[in-house]
Length: 99
Image 1: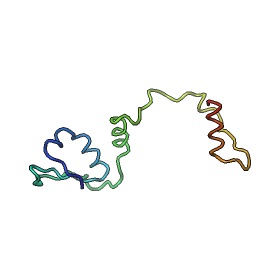
Image 2: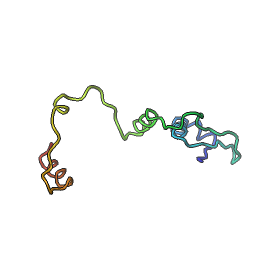
Image 3: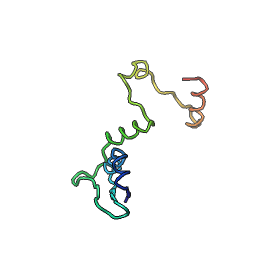
Image 4: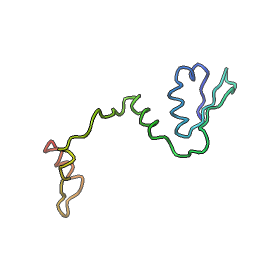
């Protein structure tokens, strides 16, 4: 269980709520004395993917797309791997071709 002071809870409420959305409980303390507990609402044991995505976006790990994917990408077939070749070698070859 995560512990947070009242000051930390005020300053980082969104981050703490992200943790709660993903099933973690947060104990709010005042001078090392427990005063409240943030817990996920019962009934939904599945983590919220939209909440996780919003968290990753907020900390700069992902950026949501702004439109539809290019038809060129969708129409291309994936590269073929020759019999006996490794997927790693195919990936490295694709990187060398700058695809």
